[in-house]
Image (tube, rainbow, N blue to C red; front, side, top):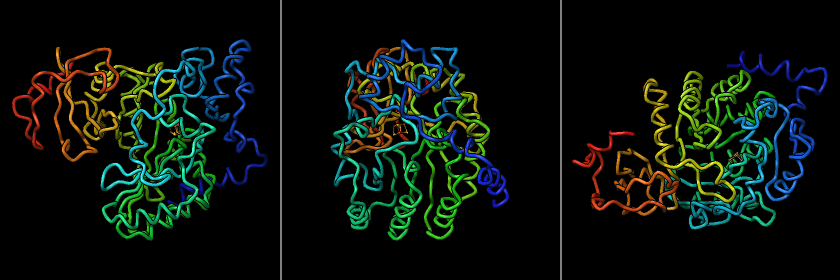
Length: 404
Ligand code: SF4
């Protein structure tokens, strides 16, 4: 472990100038980005007045500026369509799960801790872009109230650190959070949800203190620490990003990846397959593939459910078992819903996690609608009377395996 860390870190720390380090410094002024034509910039400044821009030289270098439809460009460069007024800021009604400021508690075992309203880069399709608005006040500054809540709710054994991106925080603040969670005995797992390994794959390699904090936590807390990475496109998995992922693993973290299926970014099976194959080869298990949420300004990224289902299943069909562990799910206000199958007339779904215990494992059938992007647009099929028990979907289940 030490060999790999030192190999990666030493050239970094002993760099004779700051040019390597500056490649990861935040760029927040869209007009300073070379590659965007002058006339396009005018409209984009208005966009960034509403939804901030943040990237760095390393990530912008992944863009093919010759291609106006380049997927990395669509992911990071603002687009005037963000201001079209479409969608809801809180499409999954996270407000209804908020118990105290900065803490959501939707499922008994799991607490979602919003630790920051900052990120290493701002994804244009962000599902929590409301946190970055000037008037936002969801993220807590009073962490001790959150620790008290978690300590008093002994049913919570799993804490998700999210936001925002926990790895965009200072090492000292992140370390303090881990230290406090380490002291709560009923917490068994902590997840760090982060796109930083994609945006700044020197975050860990350039920070010996963070390496020590993570290694100490995994070695001595008695808890498992997960990195839930967020790579959307195989081009983000550069050599340095793969090296960084290996370092997180060397620090004792278990790494999974989740990403939404997004129009113009990864909405074809070859791209998604390549992403999953590269992740799998790097020892990173593909976890959730999300249906995009109908968030404000995100219509341009939406892929209808039946199309996303086809893309996902074509992508994973021929992968080895380890690489095809991902599930295609929708993070709906009522729970996490897995899209199980589509046939000529119907869409089949089941609650993977249900907010209301009455819906636990509930199996649902909807009339097929190839334009629907969200559960609320679907009409239940007449035969949706089925409430199956786990592992027993009866005759309806036979149709689930038929895909389009
Ligand atoms: S890293 Fe996550 S929270 Fe941050 S902008 Fe991207 S999707 Fe949003």
